[in-house]
Length: 156
Image (cartoon, rainbow, N blue to C red):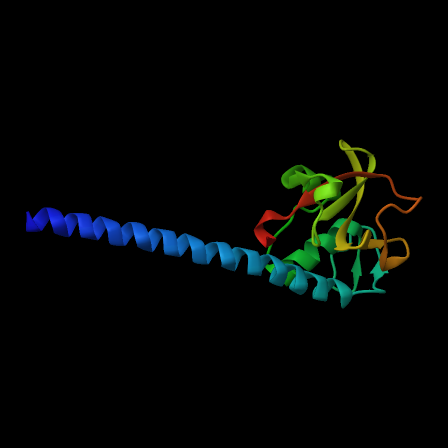
């Protein structure tokens, strides 16, 4: 009977430990999301005004997807695919009403014809690399046609 009691007590301890571990991870994950955006955004802001060069991946000049790839690599140790279309295809999509700071915004003729990407920074704005260089601007500016939004899951 003592042996059965020890087994049951051990199982209870494992169960309680499992619950405590999961609860602490949930808090850490939520804190990590805010921290990751802060680091990525800090890297992005430090490159405001950098030149646009087609095919450039930084650190002194960027194209749009080179910029998003660079800031996520340096700010969150996350590797993104090289092109805007490949980034869109590889990431988890979200709707505009569920967009969060740090999500990527994709532009083009359609979801199958993406030609530009920027990072959402809140209040309807993004930071991106385009012909004027790295700038902050409105997501729904008249010269852009937003076709999709995606979350960089590893940076959450």
